[in-house]
Length: 147
Image 1 (cartoon, one colour):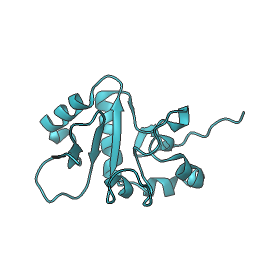
Image 2 (image 1 turned 45 degrees about the vertical axis):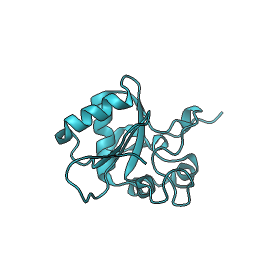
Image 3 (image 1 turned 135 degrees about the horizontal axis):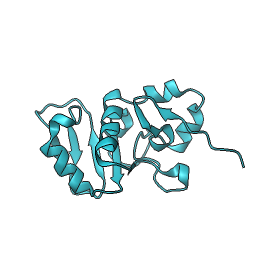
Image 4 (image 1 turned 180 degrees about the vertical axis):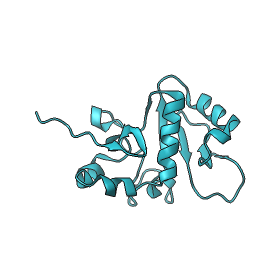
């Protein structure tokens, strides 16, 4: 059995690209990490790393280890999962599950300490994962939305 390639994300060094893109996208571009990096808004990657630094182990995609999650980071434009104009399709959003914190605990902390997460502009409420994105806001502060 061949060893699996592991490609780290330069602006979020505790993550592998396999954790933030679907398997099909990784397989298409695994030999070109710069292309994979350019799929994402750098602010989203920086906030993803900041969240892992603050809250510890977290999962975005887990397909590399045989898990079912593969569309919680980048989603291709033709992806039927989520909203038609999802920030995931622009490389500006992630859905995270934390090993040691509930999604609500993370939401509460981020909302109480927005200065620690300066690029997060929107989070999703009332879900059992922590969705954040770095969209260009038309509001001040962090907006909690309920799709």
